Amino acid sequence: MATASLKRNDRLGSIAIWSAALVLCLLVLADALSRSAETSAPPAALRLNPWNADARVASISAGLTAQASDPPDLGGMAAAAERGLWIAPVDARFRSLLGEVRQRQGDSAAAQQFFIDAQRVSPTELHALGQLILAAGSRGDVAEAVRLLDVMLRRWPDELKAVEPALPDLLASAEGQQAVLDVLRSDPPWRSRLLSALARSDAGLPPASQLLLDLAGSATPPTAGEISTVVNGFLRAKRYDDAHRLFLLTLSEADFARTGLIHNGRFEVAASPSPFNWQFASTSAAEVRLDGAPPYAGAGVRFLNKPARDIRLRQTILLAPGRYRFSVDASAVSLVIPRGIYWSVRCLAPSREIARVNIDPGTYRDRSLVTEFAVEDCAAQSVELRSGLVADSWVYRYSGRVTFHSLGIERLDSATSSN
Image (cartoon, rainbow, N blue to C red; front, top):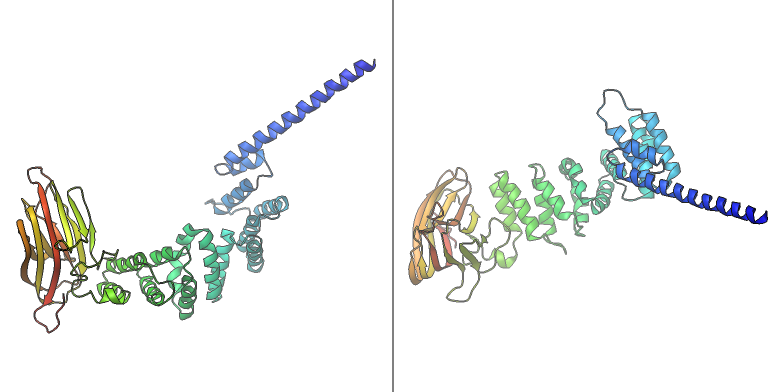
């Protein structure tokens, strides 16, 4: 009888173990299904696992952002957030959601306290940070707004787009400009993103330019890419003088000594991203380089025995109305250019050519080519090397090498001249 009782107990124990294992498997399965649905179907995910904090946050957020004709059930959402806070007391998102609900209910003081509590629990809680930044800005506490913005963008750099429309207003005051400058001097990882965002709007261009000028004398000066971003923003806005001024004021002393009506006309250093410096790139038909020892010092173009319709070597320039002389000093070795190549000075708006210097084929050294031209009704120009080939055809293969030692533009109807 004792043996039978032991066997029965063993069977009951086995059943209990298997039952527990089955329950555990079901719980694991329910949790897995809940996790898989927490984004696409938060209410269903929450029914599968009421302790799924992510599903609860997603469910409340969906209710708050729903575009329904009936007003949202704010009381129910508050209760759901409070249950979430009871389940996960260190999850700052529930405090932030409670703040949003209280704010919609008209209790701004309680809402701000929830946002403050959420940020204390998790300094990078996104929604709380956004609300606290807006609150600091509305009460004129620019320094606090910038401090919180720094915290947000270090953790959530892609969220810059959410505050981008408010950036010009933030920088409109001297206090705001100084607060942002103080942070940018520490070279935060979002500095370039901020300058790019400012450069996308007409209102953001002046403060962006001033920030770059202030950073130029700091221990963390602006990069060439940051300067180029704002310069290009001015060009897109057709504010050519502002673009050129920023370019000139951010040049090093050595680079400033190389500037003139054409910047770096002797191709002494490699190009920077600025459109007011040489922009160049090689193609499958033409290799372009800005280096070399004599007799190849300068901008070298080596053609690769292919049709060369596209040659990428150009610079944006600003010439006032008047008469000018355009000179090119070049050398060539076995240069074959069936449809020709030429330097072109073009008006940017309206687009048209105002001067051309044709390049000779063959082999020669230090040949000077000159033309004169006039500028009228043209706020900005470009100087660029172009091909006479209008369509790719293997009948017209370009080969050989040409080196441009210098390009210069000199004003003829003024005492001022430059190379």
